[in-house]
Image (cartoon, rainbow, N blue to C red; front, side, top):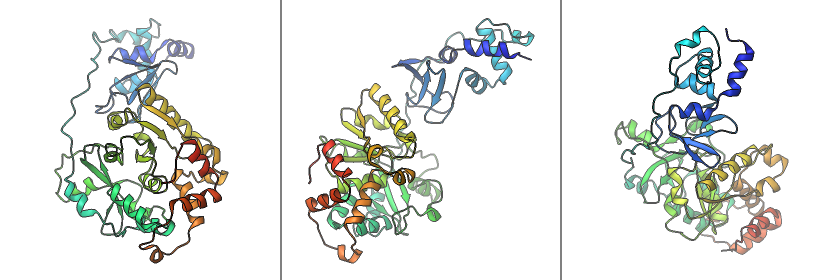
Length: 390
């Protein structure tokens, strides 16, 4: 049995950089180190971080994390006591007789840092996107937009711009189309009349078009998803626009209607915020991140940390603190995002029926003025970002 004093000596001496460096070549990146994640089929250098100051590692793709002892237990399949003995041998700290079995704790040469060659990109034929398009706004999501935005032209433009698809049961398909115009897949979501997700239809997991197509034999079984930003296909079309990055696809579409001065794109989830291969198209672009809000500011801090990592990789990124400064306690408790803020004010300005909206166009200046009157935070956003009414 290893006594507590010896256990603590080992933990104090053990460096996570040294331990992982015994097995893999690490590349210094800012104050941290990185390599391909040893715990999953990693092809994107940058997701596996090693922090010497915190003495921990973390993979932001598969979630593996811990310190030197955790790494040895997972990587070498060692028990907790044996991991301590391994480290005792490495740092010349006597533990017990069992320590002698660790004759060599350091491989002769660490595995070289090599990014595996990516397999051929799996895509979906564009004809499936074309078949799904419906500019008559017959998805529940688009119908919801018609209830809150008194400008059917802009809704149709947004549906066309983002290539919004519609399923037979009135769900919306958010197609992921990359900057080369290749279709990676599509997210299928259903909404209720109030614009909230229909959890009864969708459940708790993401429904992908490629999964359904593999089930019915339209795609081969070995087809694999490679994600990109939702809205990535618009980047070459609007090279001078500042890019606004949000979490959800729905938010990107709504915000694009109200504030078209930005090019709104979505990462599809916080875990897709790693500045990796999928975001290279944003290099050289000015990017503003719009995180959701919450009661304790955890989400804002998370996005701010990611933005710092992006800047280390050469991206021009800033994080908007608009919601942190203007959201009420109730709004923070509801974890609203920028689109919820805009939508809430649109509801105050307009109370039309769907039939009244057909073929009607509103003056953008009047819309903007009415929104600012109900919520001055919109003016703060416009002033801060130097926006103008379109």
